[in-house]
Image (cartoon, rainbow, N blue to C red; front, side, top):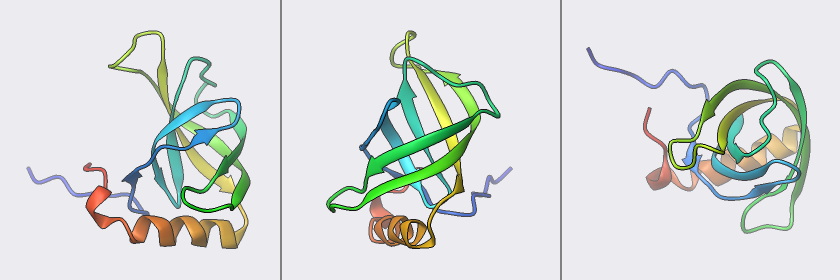
Length: 109
């Protein structure tokens, strides 16, 4: 069986610090994955604040936790997938442009 990427937005490996959560593992215009010691449960609404890499742009938005997995690297940490819910159009466009310029860093399905 051939597996295809059903994601709406391409995702890249990216390291930024999300305030009060921790570092990202990857980023897309649709959401991000964060490594944290204090996960919120799936379905929880979270406020996100982080600085776009290589810029001064500060992003503030709301997201919803879509999954929580124990980290394979450290059993005391969790990887949480967060889908962006409410975000300024220009912020989503900035993420899309950033990700689009880094095709070689895309995360496989």
